[in-house]
Length: 188
Image (tube, rainbow, N blue to C red; front, side, top):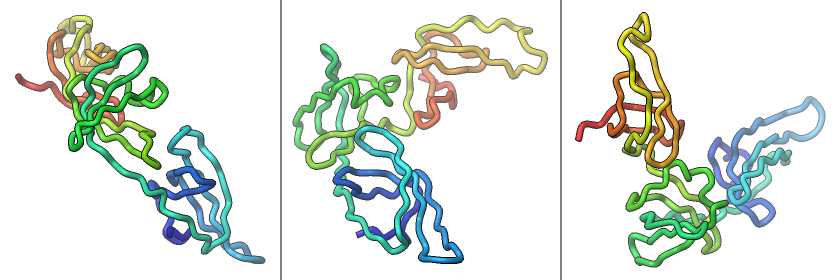
């Protein structure tokens, strides 16, 4: 059981038979009456944000989430196929389930899939990924006065990121998947 006093950002609770993640919370002790907790929660299945107020000390069940490491195999007719790395079972997810990570889907890459009641609900990419640049304009010497310019680059997955001028087509970049930004060029 998780009490309101245990709330912290990122905590997961079962509310109305669905898993929610605490996005923000505030303990309030008014001058009159009992204390309460104002929360902003994200439904982990639908992605909707809900603001709710709870009495201080109220308790919630743990949502019993499971994490599985799975390899992305291929996409076919709007379904995205993953294989469990332990049981070798294959799971097909719809476009809606992978919407947040579609710019990071790369065949043969390992992802973490979150399950709730034996059903996959979200896909989490690795924290850093190495992706190939498919298209970027050439960087022209003298484009900037300080040498700190940037240009857009389209990567193999369709993601567009800003990169330094010295980066060219065919280079492999390390990308931070949490923010979708360029970290460094990878030597291969």
